Image 1 (tube, rainbow, N blue to C red):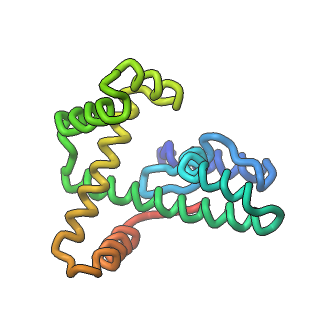
Image 2: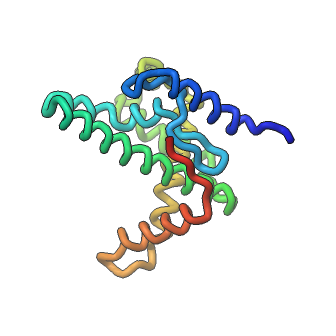
Length: 180
C-alpha cells in the first residue's frame, strides 16, 4: 500500500506536536485535515493574529489562554469550511475566470494603491506574498463568496444564515475532517 503524502504529513505533525510543549506551535504543523487538504497552524495564526493581539492587551492568565483557544477553534472551523466550499466548487467544475480575477486585482491596485502597481507588489512582498499567490488567494475568496451567495439566493429574507449553516453541515457530513 502506497503512503499518502497527507497521511505522512499528519504522522510527522503528530510526532512533532507530541515532542514539543503544548504552547509551542510550529510553522507548517497541521491543525486539521479536510479530505485531502491540510489546514496549518500558520493559517490559523494568520487569521486570528489581530484578535489575539487584542486579547493579549485585554486579558491575562487563564482567561487569556481560554480566549486564545476559542479564537483558534473558531478560526480552524472557518478554514475548514472554506476548504469544504472550495472542494465543492472544484467538484462542480466552478471557477472564477482569469479576466474576472485580474479585474478584481486591478480594482484593488486602483482603490488601495492609487493605481501604483509597484507599490502594490512591494506591499505583497512585505506581507510574504507574490502576485501568483495573491491571485490564487483572491480567486479562492471570490469562489467562496460566489458559492455562498448562490446557496442563499432563494432563501427567505432572514433565513440566509440558517440556509448557509445547513449547507455547510451537509458538506461536513460528506467529508473526512480531522482536527488536531
